[in-house]
Image (tube, rainbow, N blue to C red; front, top):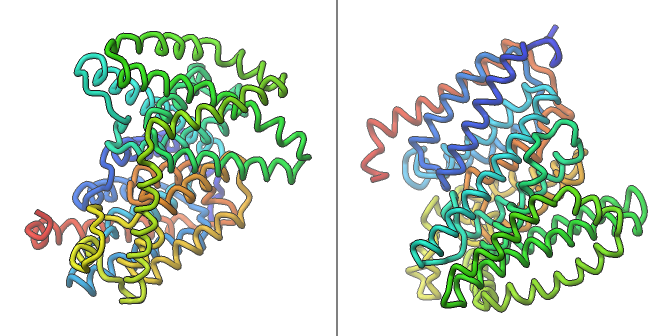
Length: 461
């Protein structure tokens, strides 16, 4: 008889796994689009941790779809380049491994992991704000906030997912770390400094879906009363961030930025009381939320090129659709769309990815890989998640329809670790089967690493 998920592990073993998963999240956040060497080493590390687990209860549909996607990436690489490593397969093979590891955790430890990830998102936001002030006040070179991810659009959706995650954690105020509620405004202020219009749209999409879910469960009036405080808080923080940006880019005295910075600190200090006031006074929250329209106009005025960028992305998708039927099984091969687009005589976009992640996967890795991701999305919405988890996943999905955040492994891993429920509807596996699965992952990562070190390094360098 397979061991249960309540008695199979010691508390120390669960804490070790939590530490390993958080270490993996730190590394993947810093790596951006992870390379083969670090991915394989990290895969071996996580597989070794998995070998210590005595049982798992994975949702086999989600697990097999992730595995099928990664497998088709490597099959495409083999068919196009003659080896398994010239693709996103080795780094994206981490996704089913993380999914399997999550299925070995109890519900209590999964909740603690979400709180730690929320804290990490807040740290990323604070680091970004510090970087922005350093560049603006000391170097005199302000620019859109890219932070630890190195790209404003990537950081934007990372913070959006982190903010929804924080809303999920704040529901259980007795179990959250004491500083976490005071860090929420910094997440939103840092998000505003990215000036990532795609991330703003993704945030709005997540909020709208959250509204629909609450409406279905209660009434439209109650759902709207729950929405206004969130919009009001976003208005205050976005307005503060835009004032901070304008103070260092549109004035000749950048130290003026200290004024909105002082306001941001005061806002953080009063945040729990402000949150309670807006929740208790939905009409006041509604009035403040309406002012968000002015903030939105200000954001567009600061970055008017966003509209032209959106038109360019539509043209990019049109280019991708032209290549989609070229090789349905294997795709044209990873990293090849850019060169094909450069040679076809049309507009050259100077980017490695079509700014529609699903379309890009279909073009470069084939229709089966694309179908695996589509079914994975449908499978997610068939399961029962919290409102915040559904909103976070929806925001991530919407962003990937006009950007490339899926290929930033740290963003996708954050969604996997916090917005999915790998054990719901899962099949209990014995300790032997669990260890065999992790041993298989270890063998695969070791083989890929061996090939890279002895045969493939000249291809990558």
